[in-house]
Length: 171
Image (cartoon, rainbow, N blue to C red; front, side, top):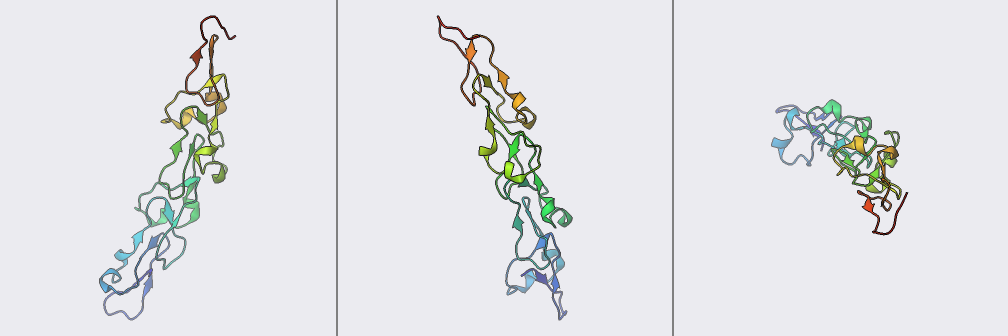
């Protein structure tokens, strides 16, 4: 695993970092050329030579290169922390925007702050955030939560404000 050898060559050569080659070498045709070493897929990296597989980026980080350049998959640092307003599971190619009514204000300082949807905080009661979760810039700070107008109310994590019942008011 992780090595190849050209025809008539007595020694094996390691696949470089950022690449892998699975298998035990029993099928010589899959271990006879450097092109048999594959670049790690998106969401993964390999910092060692002669690897049989790549390592997944930890949750809260992502790696978008889709296996094009080995240099973009050859160290853990190639996995970037998700931006404010987003989170990711392990092996993610992309980060997911927080859902309606939620925001995540950590500015990509800690992967642990971006590793699960539960990291997204709900807007407080009396505020709402109606963006459908397509624009991270609409979910990256508490100030994205809008205060309900007079005569309306909302619960925690609301996506809209509701009109007060007839005969009642809210200022």
